[in-house]
Length: 319
Image (cartoon, rainbow, N blue to C red; front, side, top):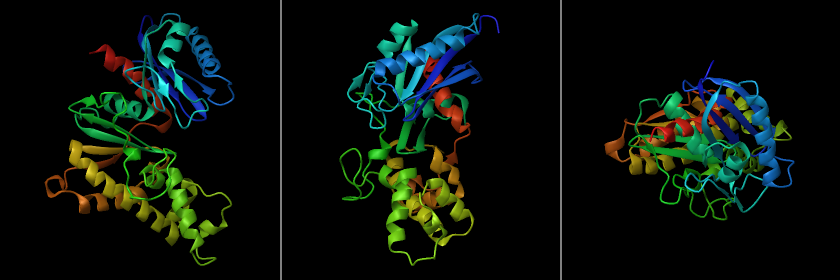
């Protein structure tokens, strides 16, 4: 491994932050993690990450590190800052790139977590060779990364591609962003649980296995659907309908070759993908019909975020 080139990929999540030492082929040679919660200030949190990275790197004295890529909620590619991330315990502006650069003495690039996933898919995954695709993360929220003409779309301020906050249902559910009816209030793991709770209130007692759970999750709804529970299957149908209708509108903007799904809810496979595809096709403008593939991500969940963040380093070094 003498004098090999590596990138460090860091993924800052709401509860856990993971990092890895990644080579150009997408092999993660070493990895570590730090809990995101439990630190009073962002500075203490970043210090813990830096110390962990330095400890890992001490085992690889010959490694040449080309830089650090970070995927973070509301991470801004242009400024290197995290701005008011809803899922993180600290508010305001966190000057992530500057602080990490001072601590580790390496070039640091930042983007949001969904853009990082799109980059990972493009450089190492199922979107290799694709110039136009949309990466949709169906997790706690709905994240997305738009790749057009082979480039991630950042917009003039670094905040482009917020599919989760396209209004899917006018005057619909309250969203954490302060508006009503955003896609992520319906098509995320938390969204499908909200739908389940609403529908269970009106469901006859004893007619669904979902009534037996104290705490409903997207995973338990998936299990119930697999076991033939009618309500659970209807929940996926409803969720896929809203997602598919919204995607039909989104396709009209970038005309993607594929829409790639990643994240907890995407694991429901056909239960979510079939209705999504069906309602997207029905609502597509005729020139787009039967042209857009819906694909599950090809990268292992645990690695997408690290790989995507590391891909930031290779991608920006090549430009």
